[in-house]
Length: 301
Ligand SMILES: [Fe+2]
Ligand SMILES: [Fe+2]
Image 1 (tube, rainbow, N blue to C red):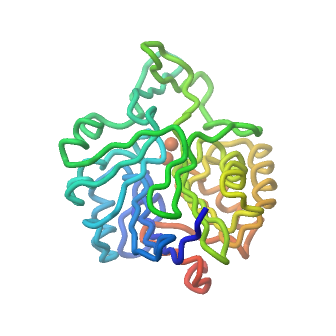
Image 2 (cartoon, rainbow, N blue to C red):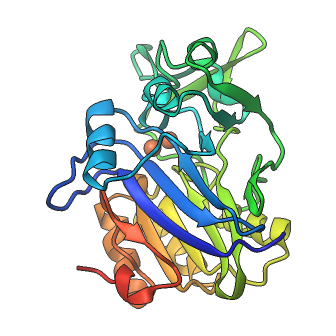
């Protein structure tokens, strides 16, 4: 994997917020980088739930998304895919990378049998993205979205981790070839890149594949001995104390310099990660900028 030259990450949508930003339940991140050839690039990961907060934060940070190189969708959930069309429209047409299952139906069914769609909302799917000028590129395997930045593709599930914590009696289901099956969120994928001497960087949406599974997969894909930086959701929200302790202990084995869990990590797990790794922990919130090569900028305020 050819190393990229520089990287700045700005959180465009997140649960937490500092002065000036607008928070929401959802996630979106902008990566601004110099790619493996030294060319400037912009990649947007996910489009959150509400256009209002997302577009406000983009304007507040004086960011221009009109020239992004691509939009990558980490997985199907509505809190990552609800503003697809406005973003594609704002770019005047852009490549949109996703796993094919992102655009299938995904529902949650409660103990009483009541169902609710939790995937890509109506009006934000492939036909509407294409009508807005977007080019949808579907793949189950890793894809190099700009020189030096790759998607993980499907992540092998080899650890204790499960896709999400569900209340008693609740099920998540997806339609495969006309049949409703248990949803393993097979589409969950992250971005990975080698930031030269700094090391490997991973950016995730919700990490339904499990952060430990994802990080192991990244090490294999890139031939990395360690992973220097993780930014994104971990889906540790609502997990048992035992599950949390196990996850947090295993995260300690990757050699992080920066660990910035956010979104579906939840407050309890975030606080525990901070206590376990105070020197590596970087608090994330709307409009947070993380520059791995500029450590003083990344400290907790
Ligand atoms: Fe999710
Ligand atoms: Fe999420």
